[in-house]
Length: 180
Image (cartoon, rainbow, N blue to C red):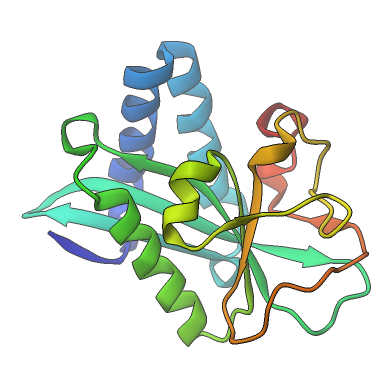
């Protein structure tokens, strides 16, 4: 298995991977929604605000993750990214590929000077790769949370997480209450 940055020629396959994986697990309608989200993230998020990683088995993309820039009002100290979404091909799930892919992405963000990573999902899964539960009192989410215990973050430096009081902004494609 090879883990690394996605290439521009991978875009269509990555969008298809997300649509198919979410269709398999959540139903065809959800697969369509997530496939369209990933397409919108590629189409509307500037390249310097987006990091995309893939897991490849030979020449097949079997997993992918996207990190997009987050910003906090009044904060000029942190460089933050939001991990969302994450997909591993159904036939490859349960083999540690998602965790390895996330660790690859987090290491690359650290190397680029990012200081914080956020995600919104299952604390049991994301806790395995260093994310810890946070509250909106510590870090405001871009939209109201329907699943508050799924709001997670980690410091990408030696410093512990410290509260940022300002409102947050995420990539326009993710700034939709339906995803939160």
